[in-house]
Amino acid sequence: MPVRHLPPNANLDHLKHQAKDLRKAHSAHQPDAAQRIREFHPRFQAAADPEIFSAQFSLADAQLSIAREHGFASWTRLKAHVEKLTPPDRRELPRHEQIDDVLFSRAVELLDAGDEAGLRALLQQHPNLVHQRVVFEGANYFRNPTLLEFIAENPIRHGTLPPNIVAIAEIVLNAGAEPSATNEALGLVCSGRVPRECRVQLPLIDLLCDYGADPDTALQPALGHGEFEAVEALFLRGAKLDLPAAAALGRTEAFRQLLPLADSNDRHRALALASQFGHIEIVKALLDSGEDPNRYNPVGSHSHSTPLHQAALAGHDDLVRLLVERGARLDMKDILWQGTPADWAAHEGRTELEAWLRAQPDTKTQP
Image (cartoon, rainbow, N blue to C red; front, side, top):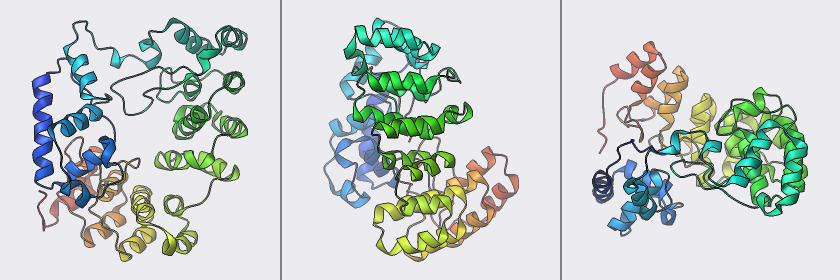
């Protein structure tokens, strides 16, 4: 789920009210509150809605959730940011322009310029640079990357990569990049459009896997962003075809073989991905097996929305009709923009689908 960006004139009292409102929504057992808590409160990351609603949820818990929902590690850090006396807010700048550390900033400049000799010399002179992390607050990912993660241009900073980025990446890897950074870099490469557009996505995947990156860790990010060439490359490097992957790719036979053994988490993610990419027979099979079309999608799979939102956004008309026929609610609102599936269809200019959705009778009311 994307974070909620603070406005330039963020007010601490308003944020306190947000925390109080979240507590009230928790007490009222509102599904969107459970989804926000699950995504942003570390204690509830694997909890189902009933477990979240039955747990004590203090004001401190609510404030931590609100802070992390805005991209800050704690309420204290969010409070310090809002109360600081040195504007402007730099979070709107490209990541490389937010780096205060002079040496780290220089390393990123050399990486972006494709300066192999300069980067190699800098890392030899300052070997700890390859292990150092820089902290970016107010973001939902790329929050504390090492130098290696900058090879993916994800998030987009320049919109391009140097032609020799594979050689640049190898210099950083040879300098001693840690396994966790290698896996993180692989996920960013596999889920970003710039590496693909620059025709370096597949070589970078091979390089990172050669240096020990686990292809399974990047499979879900690649699937969620529709980077199917990257997905196939990950399979070649040993990634396993699980139920969510089969659902996203529309591999119906493999899906049916995997379904009986899949756990509830994989079934939930499979419904989200099959709805996103319009695989109606797979969605039908998941609904037949008891999946709820009105659950918010799982964390990491557009969790601010429901399957019906994603199907409407993509214009999968027949799938939209199936979901509605099988009980998908028309009034469920996404968590970020408070839009219904009809609103999402309207946003994409899908006027006929929007009209059909708005013409359906409302059978339920969202809490």
